[in-house]
Amino acid sequence: MAVADVYDALMENRVYRGSMGHIQASNIIFENAGTHFDPRIVEAFKNTQEQIIEIANTYKEKPALIKAINKEGIV
Image 1 (cartoon, helix red, strand yellow):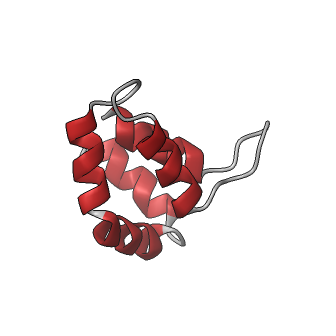
Image 2: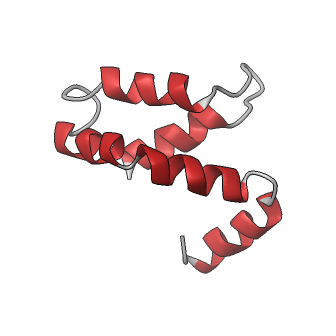
Image 3: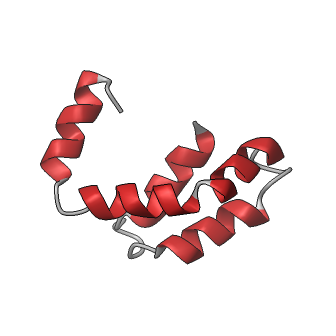
């Protein structure tokens, strides 16, 4: 869950910084494999880049839907 949480946080705007793009956010995760993140999980994250981008693009314009899905515990 840590990889997903950090990826999501990096991709969103924060009051102290703007959002990052997929490549920059992913590179931060890759760089922290073995220190902050389990290397096996980071490897799985690397192997699913196309699906991650597809999902992000599908839902980026639907924040209310994502919040509703998250609230229900589906995602």
